[in-house]
Image (cartoon, rainbow, N blue to C red; front, side):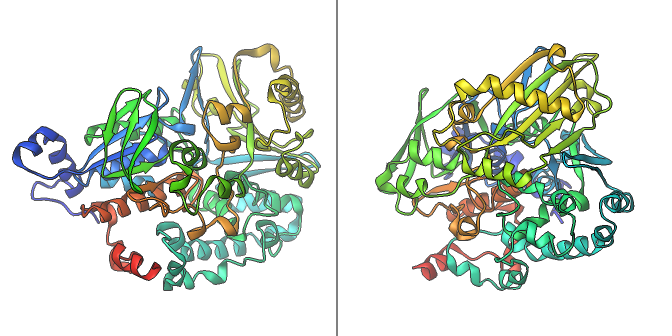
Length: 550
């Protein structure tokens, strides 16, 4: 419940309104102390953090090297076509709704969200298909056509994962500043669901016998850039989230959500500066006190880094300032897969193709081995296709369609020359699309852009071109992942898929709440979005945590 002031305005909104009308000059004149935050990167985590930090009364500046907001969740426009660059599944909007509400706004007033009745179609190269829909009875009938026994276990899978998600909320909603946080009673109660000896696939094997059905509930591990045969069993909750809370399409694409976040942030007084790259972080000892761009310097009391973690550390922070995350240690970490992308503006409609379609390779295990090995390209790859214009025709000129094609491939290890492989692999992917039922595609292409792992690394500044950041192995989760209050430096906070709690838009938004709360707490600022979490005993004051960690 949000508290309201005497005028009936949510208190967080009233606070932000006061701050917006009181400039830095006003505060200097009146002798008010004001804090300054700099946020590097206007991706989803950076924008969400900036929105929340604006509610503290601090001055907040976001520095984005690209000419548009969103990071990998930005919009790309060409010849009247509009494409999402990265995420296309919008899941579990509750967290972002709460962030907007804390800012006195409604998410649905800023962006039109359409829940898809048909979540996606799975086409199995080795035979059969499954139309995944919101109607659980219809879904069970579809599963029964693949395996009657597995359909009977769908309710048990849903019930168990409902409990698992509830049990793991403390993991997803709270910081892990040290190993001592593992002793949190709320977390200890959830451990029976962790099952570290099981992967996603083996856990699903307790419900479903047919490998195609298991694949229908495990391909979502690709959201983390991981194989379901290696991904920890916790992440069966990913498919559960889709079935329980729906798959949504923001009209205008996921990039429209980023644009709305930037609008709200600016309304709250955040200075969002585009086309301005951070060249240097200024340190006093181990404390970050400012950044320098090609246009000037920005002093800060707190620095939030939303850039790719490994790339930011290796380019912006001297190696000798880092103890746990040195260049040598980062080199030993496991990173997610990359992707080969095709963004196609197509003449005509593709009415027989749904909004989301996944074509799953017959030898799925081999496909994953090729991806994880990073030494060869999958020759019969799995492919994801988004035909968004069946839901949102405004994304293309009249009579045309957009096609977003994603092929998981290995990240950059120097074994594949993408300058040489780009065109042959494009041809292979077009052939695979023809097998899926989209023939004669090339002659209908009006506009086209291809992004390879080399492009992700060079143009998007992603370490090794790993589009999903650090892998989500058990050895790289919780306190073993880069922490929201970055442990190697003072006054530095992390947000995004490379830090706790991990990848995926809803998880990144939750991470932004964690990061903003820690930053506000450290500077003695109010955090009106906390909604009583401190009373739940899930957050500990910094002084206590520091003493125990020592």
